[in-house]
Image (cartoon, rainbow, N blue to C red; front, side):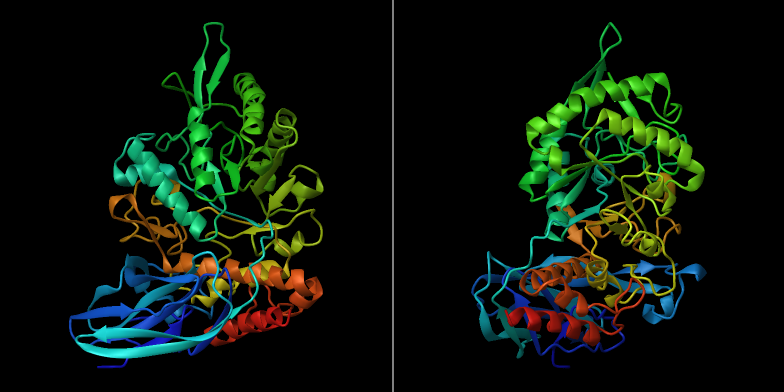
Length: 534
C-alpha cells in the first residue's frame, strides 16, 4: 500500500502515473475557498476510503471523487501546441467531481484523487495552524497534514462581472421535464446555485429562446420568459410573471447581474429569435431583422420591459445583446440593429462578443467583448475592457480550459485579466449538452466534443447529476480559483495601490504565464505575502 499524500489543485491525476505537486503548506484569505487533492493508490479493484477532518474555526470541508470522461478527439491539429496533457492524445481524462461524504469507494487499480474544498462558513479565524486529515484505507489509518496560514484580509468585492451562458433548454431536455413546471424551476435553481458558487454572477436570461448555436431553420426547446399575446386590434401584450420569478430566483441564489438574451440571430444579426405568441411562433428565421413587424414588436416590448426592470430594482444590473460574434461583413446589419435598440432602451448597457476593433472605432458597439487573442487591439482604447474565450483561440499556448489542457493553463486567466485590468468575462458554454448548431443532444459523460465539433470540454463545465443536481467539473473549480486570484490581486491593490499589485503579474499575458503548478502557486503565495504585510 502506498501512503496517501496531499497535492495541489493544479495537478491532474491519471491512474497510471504518480502525480507530483505535493502540498505541505499554503495560505489563504479569511473568505476564500481553497482547493487541494488527496492522492491514494488502489492495489485492488476497489479500495474503501474514509476521511476524518480536523476542526477549523469558520470553515468546513467538501469532498469530491475525481472521475474520468472519455475523449476520443481531444485536440485537432490547429489546437496543438507544446503545452498539452499527454500530448493531447485520446483517452480518459479526469474532470467529473462527484460529491461524496467522508466515506467512499475508489474503483480501479492505480492512482486516484479525492478533490477537497476548504470552504468558509462566514470567515475563517486568522492565524497559523496545522491541518491533519486522517485517512483510513482498507483498515489501515494514515495521517496527512499541511500547514495553513489564514491571512487577516478579505477578498475584494471589485464589481467584476462573470457570465457563462446558461442553457435552461438543455436542462429541460436532459431531465425530460416540462419547461416552467415546478420540477423545471427546481432543477434550474440547482444549476444557478452551482454557477454562483463557482464565481458566475451574471445569468443569461432568456426573454425569448436564445438564438445561439442553432442551425438556420432549426429551433431549440422554447424557454421564453416573456408571455406574448396579440389583441384584436393587433397590439402586442406582454406578461412578465415568469421573468419576475427568474429574476427573484437568481437573486436568491446570489447572482448580481442579468444578461438579456440576444434580440437578433448569431453571426450576422439578420433574423429574429424564435418568439411565441398565443402558443404559436410569430417570429424566427423567416423574419427580417429590421422588418416593420418585428421592429414594431420590439418597440412595444421595450416600452413595457424597461419600466418593469426599473420597478424590479434591477435595471442598473441588466445588460442587453444585439447579436453574437458579428464580423465585418455583418457591420451594416449590426449597426442598424444596434442603433435601433439603443433608442428603444436608453440608459441600458449593451455587450456583445466581437473581436474587430472597427465596431468600436465607428461607435457601433458600446461595450465590445474581444477574444483573448484580440485583446491587445482593445486594451487602453476602450472605456471598459472585457474578454472571452471559447473554442478559440486554438493553439499558441493560449489560456483555456479544455479537458486535455494542464490546469495551470486554466487558472492563469485570473492573473492575466488583472494584468489587463478587465472588468468582465464571458464564456458561451455552461451547460451546452448539444452537438454543434443543436442538431442533436449529447450525453456529456460520453461526448465532451459536441459530436466532434469542438475541443473537448468547450461546451460545458457542469454535468447533469441525479435528481436534478449539478455536478461540477474539475475545470470549473480551477476556473473559480483563477477568479479568486483576480480578486486577491484587487485586495492587494486596495491595500498597496495598483502599481504594487500589477508588478507581480507584469510578465503575464494570455499566452505567457508560469507553466508548472509549483511556479504558479508560488506566484499566488507571493500575492498573499504582500497582502499579509498590510
